[in-house]
Image (cartoon, rainbow, N blue to C red):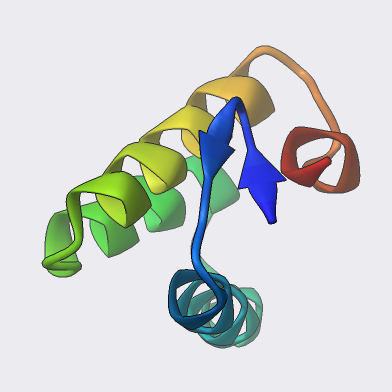
Length: 68
């Protein structure tokens, strides 16, 4: 999977989607939640991906477009 020009491994993709599922159930604002998730992860690429997604959402991009 590639998000915002960042190529993720299968393991990173699984972690990303799992954490996104948890975030959607949490009720947090999406950009804030994405940044919080990025602060929690140990993998630099995944941390950058969460930051890129948060920035894309703040620019008004829908999540599905930001992911693609």
